[in-house]
Every structure is written in structure tokens, then in C-alpha cells.
Image 1: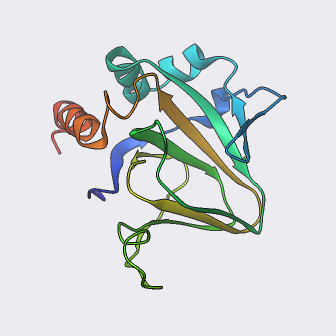
Image 2: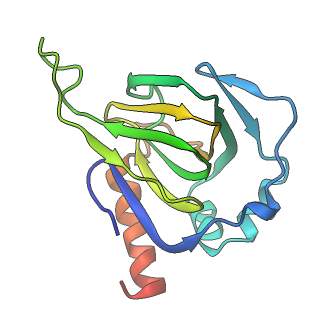
Length: 172
């Protein structure tokens, strides 16, 4: 189980994309197209982790699509402190975190890579600079956006809650 200040791999939970029906008409999310999930209740109730998570914190979910040869440059999210992502489709992309990318005048910065596995849940720290390089093919991510903003729900808070849930359900 990958566990650090950037992301947490949530073990023993796989996302069932069979119930995923997304809206035809996307809306623009920072230059990328997000397709809202049509029947969130079906998706949530199909997965014990999502069911528990929604009982703790209300959220909306959608699918963010990224075309090939695209860079979503380093940034920190304005309002989101944390999200949960599931990679649905990917040919060749890289997700990176760097705390030093905006510090100082150096052209160099340390990097930490999140190596997504398809259909696996990851808690994602939106308040550390991160970037996505989509090199080949289309990239699709199922993403959960919480109703609470970064001042009310942070990565450390949700990480602790999820760890407690993991221990209570798996003993890990």
C-alpha cells in the first residue's frame, strides 16, 4: 500500500465501472472536460468503500477526460484540499507531485510519481503542487469532489479516517 503525504493507495477496493453512466454533455473543468455521473447513487451503493465514504462526507463525482499530448501543468487546487481518483483509461501518462516546483529560482525540483493502477482508489493531496503529462491515447479518471473545501476537509484528516476504515474492514 503506497502511503505518503502526496497520495494513499486504498487497498482491497476495486472500482466497478460497469455502473458508470456519464453525461453526454461535459462541462469545462480547468480546460479539461468533466462528465458528471448520471446515477451517483448506483455507483456509490455498488461499492462498500464509496458507501462508507458518502456516509461520512457528501460528494459529487464525475469523469475527467484528457486528450493525448496534453500537459496539465503544476498547480495546487484553489478550493479542493483532497479528492479521490480512480484511473479508468490510460495508454501512457505520468502524474507527478513536487513541493519544490514553485520554490526558489532553480530550474530543478524533486518529484514523486503516483503510479496509478487501473480501477484502484487513490486518496490525492490537492494542496501539494501536482501535474499530469498525458503522452499517448485518451486518459480518463473517475474523480470524487467533496462538498467541503480545503479549509474544512484536508488530506491528513481524510487520510486518518480512511486508515481507520481500512483497519476496521481488512485488519491491515
